[in-house]
Length: 420
Image 1 (cartoon, helix red, strand yellow):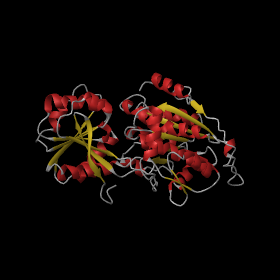
Image 2 (cartoon, one colour):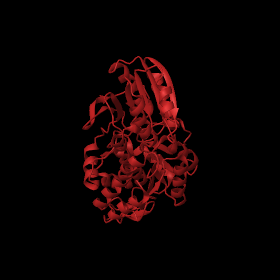
Image 3 (tube, one colour):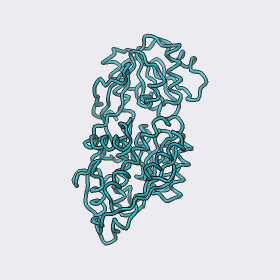
Image 4 (cartoon, one colour):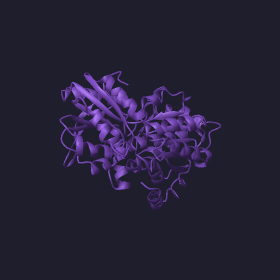
C-alpha cells in the first residue's frame, strides 16, 4: 500500500494525522485505575505510547495493510471504551528491507517511543532489533518474523514476537510431503535472506527422503527460467518454494508457463497472500500451511476487525493485534513510557494467575494493569505466554490447497513436541 493511501485511511478515522503521524485519544474515564503504588501515576495522567514499523512498500506491501490495521485496532477499541489514559500511536514504513526498518525504527526512537510493533519480514526484524531497538532499550514485538535466528539473539530481554518459529512450519510441510503425498525426494527454491535460508534448511533437515537441491533466488531477478531448470533437475516429487509476493509472483508465473511437471508444489506462508492468488493461475497439486489463529479471543477480534475495516483479517492480522495489545498492557503495568520497564512486564501480563483479558475487553485490562493488578492476556492468534527467548503465539497450522473458488482448508496440523 502506498503512503498516500495510508494517510487518507487513517485521516478518515482521525487516529493518525498522516503516515508516521500520531493519534492522541483523549480519555474520559475518571481514573478508576489510579494509584497502584506510591510512585504509580494515575492512568488519567498518562499517555501510553507505541509505534509500528510495518510494510507499506516493498515485497510485503500487499500484506502490509492487514498488519497496520491489526496494530491500530487496539486504539480504536480503547477509544470506544473511553479509556482513562491517552493513546499515542505512530506508523513508519519498513519498506520490507533491513535498511528501511532500521531507519523507520530510528525515527520512532528519536521521538521517544518506548515500544514498537514490528518489523514484519524476518531479515528486516533481525537488523532492526540488533541495530536500533536493542541498543536503544526499546521493546520490539514482531507479529510475523518467523526466523529461528530471532530466538537466539543477545537481546537483553527487549525482543519479542507473536508469530511461530519457522522450524514448526518446516516440520509440518515435511511430514505432509511424505504422509499425504508419498514423496521420497524433494527440492527447495528459496528467496535469498534469513527467512528463505532458514526455512529451506529446516525443511530439508526434517524431510524423510532425499533432498536433491536447495536453490536460492533473488526477488530482483530478470528471469527465473534458469533457476527453475536447475532446481527441477532430477524430477523431485516435491518442490517447496519459499518467498514473498515480490519475486514470488513472477517466479511462479514462469514455473507454470515453462517448467511445471508432475511434482507436487508446496508454497511457504509468505506466498499465501491475496496478491499471489490474483496473479498466479494455480493448477492442481499446490499446497501450503499457515499459522492458525486459534486463540480464545479470536472471535471477538474478527468481529471488531470486520466492523472497522469491512473485511476479514488476513494472515498475521491477529498476531499484530496481540503484539500491540500486549505492549499496551505492559506499558500500563510499567507505569511509564520506559522501554526497560515495559520489557519487564511483557511476560507478566501474559502468564496465568491474574484476571483474564481478551480482545474486546482490553480497556479493562489497561485499567487493572495500570492499578497494579495482575492480569492474564489471552490472545486472538493464540495463547501468548512468551518464553525466555521472547517467543510466543500459536503452534497450530492450517493445511490448505487452492481451487478455482479460492483456498480450501484440508485440516489443522500441530507439530510434534520438541519440534521448535
